[in-house]
View 1 (cartoon, one colour):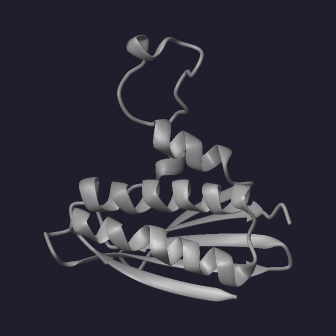
View 2: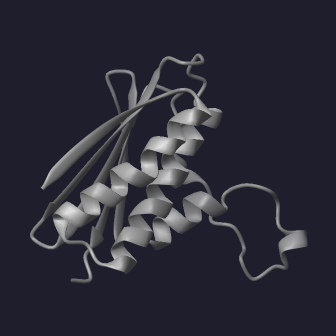
Length: 137
């Protein structure tokens, strides 16, 4: 099972995420926990590209490719934003009270925690982030 969606550099594009991930999850037979993880990860990744990627407004910013094979969900975000490897960002100290933590980094932390493996590469001027999650079928 595979599906793809494209997103422009515009926050209104985020409205496409929930129906896209829900339809994919239903077709792929994902359970509630896996759907929840997929939706959190997809929203975090696409939002970050739209908000911080440096892509001009209303231009193509990112593609989100989803697939399920042999009990493994693969999420691939390909974006044309500024070169950035979010996996190099240090995890926030979640033991500190929220008021004492610096702003930022929590979304990437959640993406790491909700997936089993993550890989980043820069390819032909694009950021390509691949995350994999073993499904709980």
